[in-house]
Length: 625
Image (cartoon, rainbow, N blue to C red):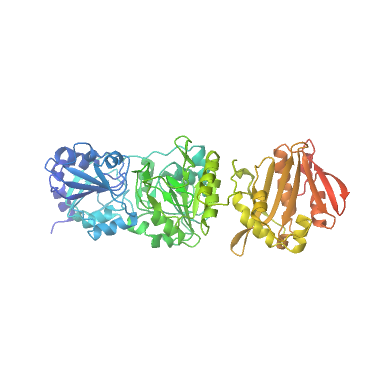
C-alpha cells in the first residue's frame, strides 16, 4: 500500500489546474484572515472562466477580494459572515450579501449543512512526518469547512506556521495541493493616541491579576494590552490574538497559570499581526488553536474564571443598546464574537463583559453616546447583556441599574461637549429627573488612589460623580443620630434628591468632593465623604466631613483631610474654613493634627476654624501620614 508521501505527491498541482476542478453553482469557503490562499483566489477569478453562480463565503480576509469587483456578479456572489474592508463596498452596493450570525454558531451551521459548503480553498503548513498539515493561523470556521466540503484544495506554504491544538488535518483529506511560498499578510500595530491610551488605562483598571482576557483587533485592544504591562499571571482565551498578546507572554505578564480552563495555554481561533507573531506561534506548545465553536461558545467562555471580555462598538444609546455592525445605516462589519464573549464573561465567576469605544467620531463632531441609535442601526448587544461601557472619560457600570441610572452613567462618560444635549434628550424622554444636571468638566482621574487604614482595611478614594448621588444617600441614612447631628449640626431625617445632587455636583476646581469607597457585604459602598466649596473673595474653601460609624477611629478622616489639602493646594486655594461642634472631639483632632496653621473662634456651641496653607508648602511636610 502506498504511503502518505506517495499519495501526497500525486495530489500536487498548479493553482490553475486546481480551480478547474470547482463545479459551477457551488458554494466556496475561502480561508480566513492571514490564511487566505491568495494564489488560489487569483486563479479562481482569472482562470475559472467556467464558473457561474458560485457563492463565496468567508470571515474577514486580509488578502484581495477580486471576486466582488464590478462585473463579477454573474460568476460570483459573496456572502460575508463578517464584513472586512475588502468587501465592504460590494456589500453596501448590493453586489454582495451579509449574514448576521454569531461566530460560535458558524461551524454548526456548516457541519449541519444549514449553510452548505461544497468547496474549501485553504492554506496550510507543510506536512509533518505523519502526514499532517496545520491550518496555522486560522482554525476558526475553516476546520468545519474542511470537514464538510466535498472538494478541499490547499495551498501548501512553508511560511505558514505549524500551530498546535485542533489545527491538524491529514493530507488524505485534501484533494489538491498547490505548493506556494510567500509571506503571510501582516496586520500592523495601531499606534496609540491620547484617546485610546486613556481607554486602555480605564479597561486595565477593571482587570484583576489572574484574569483571563479576550480582546479584538484595533487601536483600543492594542492600548488595553499595553496598559496591562504591570499585571501578573494573566491568561488568554480569545477568538483572535495579535502582537500585543505575544509581547505580554514574552514579558511574563501572560502566563496562564491561574486559568481555570486549559491553564498555561494561549487559546485562540485565529491570529493576525506581524511576521514576528507568526514566527512566535510556529510549533509553540503554549499556543492552542481551536475552532470558533469552542473558543466562542459562551458556555466554554464562562468556564474561565475572572473572564474579562473587551469588545468595541460604533455607538451606544442611553439605555445601553450597542450598535457594532452598522454605520450610517449601512452594514459595516458583523456580529462576530461580541455577543458570544459578552454572555460568556457575564456567566464567568468574577467575569466582566466590557464594551469600549471612543466618546466621539468624525474628529469630535459626533457623539458615540446617543439618545437613541440612528435609523437603520443594528443592535448587536442588547441592553440586558451590557454591563461595563468604557470611553476615554471613564467607566459606566450598567449592571443592575435602571434607565435613569444608566442614562446618568453613560452621560458621565460621554464627551463633555455633548453632555448638555444628551441630558436634554434624556429629560424629553423622561429618563431622568426634571431638575437633573450634568457635569460639563473632565473627571480628574489623577486624584484617585487606594489606601490602607489603621485596622488594615483598604479604601478607594476618588472625586465624587453625579452618579454617586444614591450611594451617598445610602451613607447618610446609615449614620447614627449622633453622627448625623455632628455632620449637619442638627437633627435631619430625610435627604431628598435636590440635596444629594448638590453634594455630588462639583466642578473639581471651585468645588470638590472626595469619597472613600469599600466593599461592604459584597457591595461597593461609600463609607466617607469630604467636600469643600471655595469663596472666590477669600480663596478659602469651606470644608465638611462625614464618616460612617463603623469606619470611624481608623484614620479615615485624617486621610481625607490630607488628600483634600493636596487637592486644594494644587488648585491655588489659600486654606480651609470649617464649623465644628465643640463636642465633636475626633473632628477637631483631625483639623488640629492636619499640619495647617489653625485659627479658631467660638460661635455658640461651635468652633469656627480657619486653616491656612503655608506659602512654602511646609505644612505638607509635617502633615501626619
